Image (cartoon, rainbow, N blue to C red):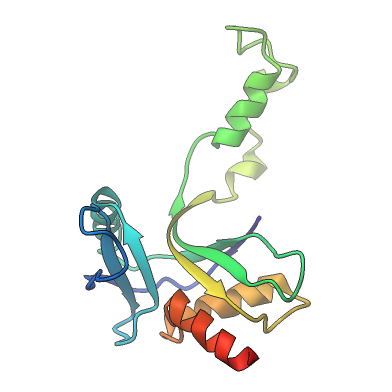
Length: 182
């Protein structure tokens, strides 16, 4: 899994959009378009549960750092599926680290791990490295790669293209690709 974090924060605005044809009428999902830095073209679109919309509304009242999470396709011809997310600071042990510590511990005795130096605590050098989690909320995809030899550059370009509003809904992009291939 690859993660690209954009250094510069952006101002993010959410607007509800007409969900006609996207979700069944009885669905609780909310169709949302995300606009970056007062751009009139949407950067991302998503169908989200109301709870997620409420969390995002609270989070985006200040400029936010965005990132992309994606698995590199096995072939250049395969489209890229990524998720846009908010980068948020994390303190304490990460869930995967907690699992590693507990894996070596006898049942009910976490202090008996396989690490004899566990009592010493964390190294000061590691404390200087900020930790973040990426809370993903909107899908992004690229049908044709621009940088087949550099997936990191591909993700950076994909996010930057989206931020300026140079994206289209998935269905529209797929139809255009199909017509181009004819």
